[in-house]
Length: 599
Image (tube, rainbow, N blue to C red; front, side, top):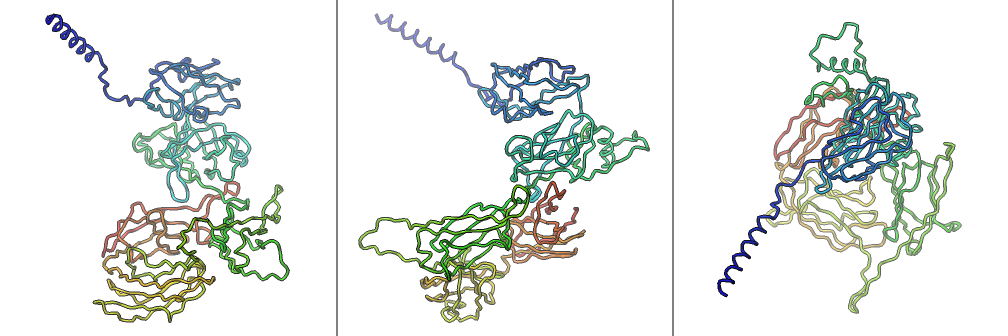
């Protein structure tokens, strides 16, 4: 009996070991994308006359959003039907193919393996219905005109051999491509010809520039696409070490946003490709409308518009009362696209619902200017909450925000007062202002004022001393707004920063040919700005130690701001340049930088 138990035990151990040896070991994760092993007809076929295409991969795949990702160039009026059978993609045509035409099917990021999701990016299947495969390409990069950033989402690249101005508005392109998430694009297998070239963020996927919010970019002139022209560009740029170009070859200039051979550095010159840069922009809309409106406080109304308001704009509260003298304080933002109204009369702003009629100028369907009238309803109700018996109702107060930066004040700034309502006046007699060396209060002279550009801000200025302690006391009534609200006593102590805490940038600007707007940026926010017309030395002082970027806007029309482009008016956006490197400012340090403008 004991012998039988021992034998059973060893058999169980043996079976367990066998089971362990038979288990999968796992291994490294598959990171390779699917690979094409066969195509029928073969990729890059000529004299193509098949009704369907079979593309087989080395593993099971899935198609992710293929109807949107697949780009067919030239576009087909009837999109081909795409099916998937295990490891094979089946493409079936819904229309007769054009004669003597090279077709390119670019699958974008739609092909990925079944288990790991590894994507085969921008796989192309190419065939020609004639005897020759067209081999020219237009390649390049896209950037946004305003800040030269790269679009991380796909942008359509559209080529037309019809050179009329209306083509992107009414016709689909002859060839179409797409940019990747680094802004790089390549439209391949083109026949030699002259093309109009556009980039379009196609919001409704119809390959037409027909939405006011669609970003567009275009070349100023038509683009010659042939091997001879590609060669002449490379030769002119010094990228071809060749003496084989004949003496009568014309090095044709192209008036575009800038040929960009820089991308050839790694791969070398390509005689079948034309390289271009395109700048994307959104046109300023010609359609005026109200984008949003709100009533965040009983007395505060805000309306936002798509375009700056003209002098024809006016408003009135409803119902209209004869001889009504409602007091309304209005504030337009500098761009005149947002209006804030402060209603003074409590009989009006205590109403739960206010109605307002607004009138502004718009274009009708015949492009004639007419006056449009809208009636807006503004509702406001206080949020109710349960109160304890001993809890009294809290009244609205005048809220004043002042010192920031953890109690440290910059030497080159006034001390700001930010209110929750428009400021009416400042009573200096109710303000105590002291320097406090060694805890001894010494009264200091000061001045106060109301900010002319922002209704809710005032300021206090003094002859600030470096790394010194100050105290400010605002007694009730020291600052008053347009409503009968009071603030509590405000008693704050703060110190100024050490003069040696700051650094400065000494910018030498060269090759200034027009008005330039210089913007000093930190984390994409404009910190300082200057308008200059001549080359020279420009100083940015009292800078907090951190990283800065310097932007240069070519203000070609002299209106003091960056202006976008307009396709039908043949206007490119105003050029923008950046200092090639960011400047890391250190305390008590002068940073000398030089910028030679290129545009």
